[in-house]
Length: 102
Image (cartoon, rainbow, N blue to C red; front, side, top):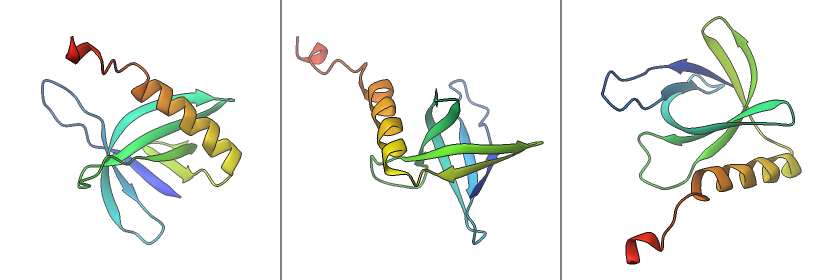
């Protein structure tokens, strides 16, 4: 499980950045790429602020207590595949790669 803390920068274009704390107490900042609700559950796609790759992680909202939010990994393969497909459509489905070539 991870705890989610909101650290919004004060810039013109706001980017949601959260500090996640893993079970061992290690903290890392993640940018929120998007969130979806599927089958009554809320999921977040997050990418590491420090990472130099195009990968993202998917976490499920497990609970909220005050300002603290608990996110967990999606261990069920079928659930993960459904959520990943939804995020792929939402995050990358609207990009028209041919528009720049015209």
